Image: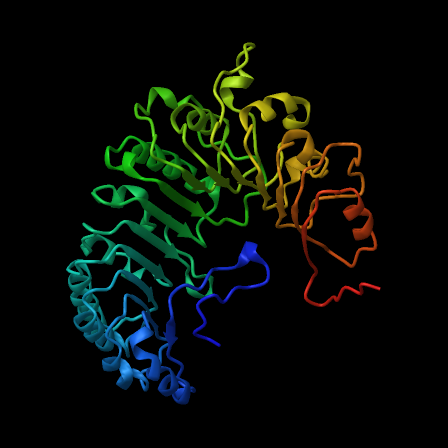
Length: 417
């Protein structure tokens, strides 16, 4: 039942709870669309997939609150009409493909004006598959928007000039914004972007409007990152004078030792922290002989690539800094500088309170997991390179395990016998 409200995927770590009833138009399934229109009063989300033949049913839907639209040169006029009809939209998700005609550019300008006038719009998501339409971000007014998500995903891995990429500074004058997400899925190397990233982050943290944010995500995917990243050469306390007391969730491309020190000092209410670089010791600890009194008292979920080599000999410090972490996600990278830091024994050593462990890479080894440690893991997700006959041995070392997920390469099957 595609309209069932409690539809859920098996693996909850990758699932989304389906709350709204959604109609997705498909060019080859007009009968399905006709069937669903019998429940038109219940449909609250409409999603197109380039199809225009099913739009004849649109007048039947009066309660649409969410609209997802793949924008191309053929359907901009239809989108324009949708915005006229569904003025009470709360969620708008636009995906811009390459449209080079003058008519398309003019139509996008008209659409921008209508979006800015939607009185109830609180969530706006914009995906760019081409940088031609970046200027739309400068023409939109987001006065009522509480959640803004910008994704840059160049089609066919087309390179984009790093200077043209969106930065948080563009969205700081939004009075009601509580969640800002900027995801760059293809960008120049982290080395070439380090200076721009570090400066823009400081400018954002110093903004008065930025202090209102509860969630902030700014991530740039860069396959060349294979070592510990150093963005700052000096403490940030001299450059950033504000505390981010409202911020509870933070996700960045990388966190170096100076930035981690700043987060300890200025983000006291973080409950979730995510970054793609290895976890390092804060600069404030590595440069002083006295123990730090700062720690992440509310942080429960921590996501990072892997462990830096220095952590194994500083387990007491990590335990002190992260006393409440119960969910740990190690994303894993091919990181030559931290090859020795992939033994899974480091998890119970550094994070003894962890109950949910997600290993999104097969680079971690379980062979020498010490069963004498008090391991609290209740949920475990791992990826495997090959079929493993040692899974039973692993499970026996985890007496409190309740849920166990494992993933194999697509060309392999696991024979439970």
